[in-house]
Image (cartoon, rainbow over all chains, first blue to last red; front, side, top):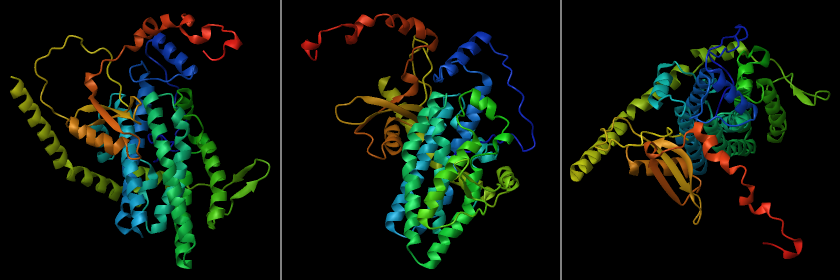
Length: 337
Length: 112
């Protein structure tokens, strides 16, 4: 489960967003502000500023898209899992991701956007999803690393969202976070097993970590200094902790886990800073990150094509279910008449 | 997870429902244990009630979260209007004598 604290309509180099000026009823706005200040939840029937609604629709639908696109890189490994046990675990995890997508689409729908519209936006490439899924899963260790690091980063991002001001989003996140802990643990455990194997197996784990580490750090979004919409998201109670702060927390938690696992994290600048009581780390390659977001990652086209094909291949099932329901409805009406 | 529209037209123009066009939205309620109440846990789209039950089972009870499921068409739910919140619920705020803690009972009486 994966969210990326990022607003894809911004490009690097853009300046701080202009403050949102409300053209709406000051009385309603005041009531909304009071509610946020009291840390109350905003519910679907409540009045909300148009910008708040728009931001949430974009963030929640992107989040939902990430869940279902996230099924693809791991789904590739279901038929190639090394044992029946690992296959059962992977199926359960991929099924969870589909469920998480549904919770999130449902939450977005409460804001007045249709499921069909959201899917159309994903399939046309208009809507974005987490860039982490635009990288390939080359070997079995990648599946473990996705659980350990990608899901680990996602959990760090999602825990503060459980306190998001929008009720349906917060409730969806609580459900998701409960299920997510299994995802991270199964991945880490799969790697522990590989690390007890042959030199080649250990090398596979190290290779997978090398390829995913920096991408995972980028999942937290641009540095705070270059995150123009953050301030508004904080004011609205959508964001609770800054990108850099979450990233630091994730690094601090992960370094000891890597030591137990017996691999090195591919950052020569990674060092404990006694004064800060945090790990210092090297620079993230943001150019590569933005290139991937903007469609030029190694798997962007393949992921989208697979997703669209799956949707189209399922059309007859949806049609048949609807035709059956219509027939039953007509039958009942006839009997009632 | 969806919330129904508040106060739909109270006078049902009850003739025939329009023919189905999309899978309608259903609200899902799950009873977690024998003896407990069903609780709302989310919503989903499904073509009919049986389909909705099947989907609810797959989505909301993968880890033995329930022993029974209800599904209700979302548009069958009538909700109170948020604007009426004060009128509906405020009057109860000053009636503290409705709570057992309002009453002082000597300690020697023990649990009551």
